[in-house]
Length: 149
Image (tube, rainbow, N blue to C red; front, top):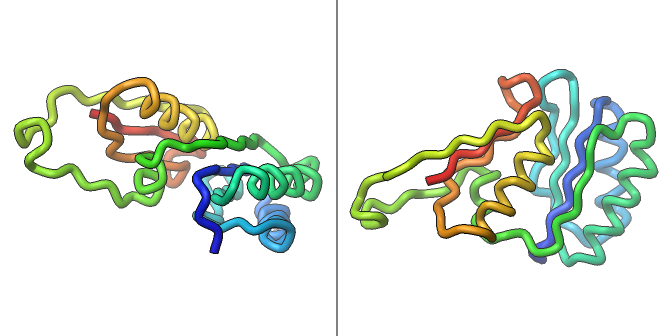
């Protein structure tokens, strides 16, 4: 299984094309599927990880196969390590951190899943913070949001 720190994201307006793209990219490159599922508004979302060249190659194949159904794509070469568990919903806030309490809370809401993940990566790289969650499109009309403290 691929374990690089690059992330590829493909958001499609067609569920059928989503399955086709998922099959093609997993056959085309040595990448690991993190998420591949339907999301609100009848869209399909795919997130993969691997080495930069493999992820770039997989996303290029996805764009070619997805054609008219592509809503948004991104390749993030050096994703901050805090983002992977936040996407999966596996972040844990230790009671010993920050004296055991959360001071300020920031919620960033985005129009697309790709934008939410990009925002999470940039925030983690630019400031000392804890990324609590990256929520991608389920039950919120295809939007994304992140929760930071």
